[in-house]
Image 1 (tube, rainbow, N blue to C red):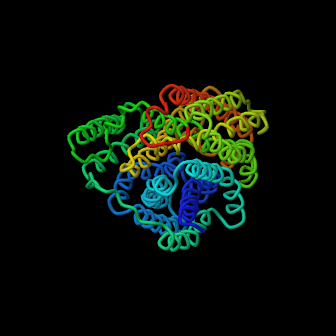
Image 2: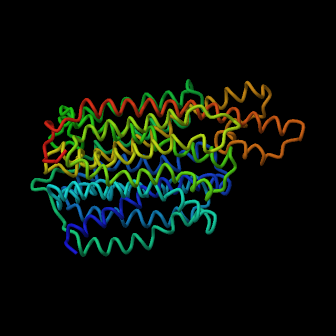
Image 3: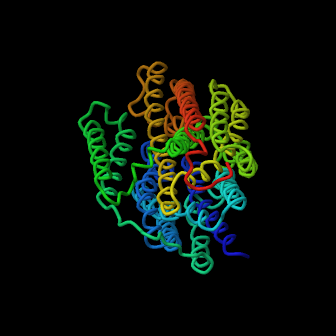
Length: 499
């Protein structure tokens, strides 16, 4: 097999593992919550610690790839990711699990930041469109089978094994990468921007921490206000550093290109809307509808399989259709699908989400290949690592801010609606409802006189709050669709593409 196809296979395996570790974990979260006695905040961090560290280190990893060679950074990232997966699997405390999930994200950054650049260095012309179609299908495939695999592993082996399965795959993939993939360097690699890395990472962490802890601590509390102010100040310092640096981690001049802004907005909105909502859909399936992990995973299939099927079709269409139409129409379909999911009631079955799942799944599949192609096309060849890293950063920042932001709104709505239903609810009941639905209330074994009423109130509060965040996710998707239609023009592309 030619080197370029080996490159595509190994990049696809890495991408599959990276995204699988988001979707596969979602289905296992209720079991993790019960096993480790985790709160909603801890569950959010299981997702966000991973996404946040990915986002924080992607730009640096992309620059390292241009400097040290993309294969080398890719392999090192694979090693860190594999070792961290082992540590996650042996964790017996929520804090330890979240710390090791963060380490997983650091390793994932090395893999993800160089993935598109590795494809870009090997493929040109029609083959490039095919390669990005395969990559997009891999993204869809990871999303497609993640919930199902997560359900099977969690029920048969335990949630720890959703991490242990990465170990043999990672070891084999690292060996093949070193033997089959070229280690391409940038002709004039730029030095690392350590001050930029520190200020960017710290700003993101404080912002996400404030979103996740805002409801428990109080939005006007000194801790939350300090975090929000600190995040703003550090981001301002980061931007100042980038403007003054001769070798910035984030080349702000790229934002003068409307197509760059457009594809970044599309990547962010797809993640902040649809993908961030997966956590809350999972809690709804298992906490309100009382499905097992496997049953929940099976019910994700209509959404995720259609995303997998639509991706290669969209990749092939990019030879004949402008990429902006794929991005804009794909996110429009995601937004319509979310609107079709809106309006469920406490008595609804999961089939109330089915039509929305089908439409949103097609939208995801249409959008993903275009994001991959445009992310490379909008930057010069010598900055392909940075372009890949920036695009992946917007994806991960989208997931982390989406999970935290939707979670803050969700928790607040659960608390207010529960107070309407149960004016004298026990302290902390809202947190239990938000993290595990009415199933968590049943586990409290309340006296029969109030038990049934509390379960009903939990269902009403959860579903009402769930509807609110579905609507918000739809709005985010439509905003991204507009950005894709308006900003992403092939005339602004720096590298050749057939879209």
